[in-house]
Length: 239
Ligand SMILES: NC(=O)c1ccc[n+]([C@@H]2O[C@H](COP(=O)([O-])OP(=O)(O)OC[C@H]3O[C@@H](n4cnc5c(N)ncnc54)[C@H](OP(=O)(O)O)[C@@H]3O)[C@@H](O)[C@H]2O)c1
Image 1 (cartoon, helix red, strand yellow):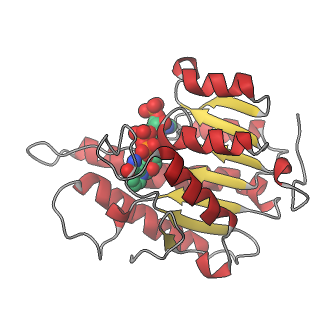
Image 2 (cartoon, protein in one colour):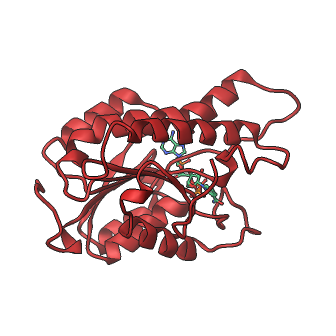
């Protein structure tokens, strides 16, 4: 199925690429947009184990599941080539990791956090830019975290994660300067503290509540939001 030229003719025509789509917020995005009738390219590392995602794909025929480790850059290019003729209206860079420091800093673990949370989303976005530019919607969402805010970093812990999301924020800020809002609309978006494997059971928000807020924010992105850092409700987060 080749989809070219999806535009403001109706929500059902949107095509959305989501990374880390097998669980947590990624799966929540897939469920929401599938129920809206949108076409979804749902990527995850191990489709064979993604039972909830597979069940959604059986329910909604317009979900394509693709195997992708976002740090496998050759695989990113291959996937972009597979979808070369597509028009991607919304690209959601959702996949991320939170790893903890034990007793001392470990370079390999820290670099993996930086790679997964900051480098890989930018490389993937670069690979899919032609498909996004083809869209009149052309939104690129980078799921960040208020933990990446330097101004808000007053608590201890999570140095690998905080530094990686701060790097992502700077990369997105810089990337956005290359485009006007009318070419590519790029934002960093914090989902809030959400009850996922990453957020834990004590988090404030359910996946559904966070997704409901984020999809409203994504739908309402205006020129003032381009290159900015927003929370799930669309409020500006201090850098
Ligand atoms: N939950 C929160 O409170 C919270 C708060 C602020 C920001 N965030 C951000 O929200 C996003 C989603 O988080 P979540 O809470 O849904 O976390 P999660 O439940 O831990 O899910 C993380 C997802 O990222 C995927 N992933 C990790 N590394 C990957 C890689 N190299 N290639 C492809 N996929 C990879 C995981 O796939 P596997 O199943 O294969 O590991 C999983 O699908 C992340 O960017 C996170 O930093 C979350």
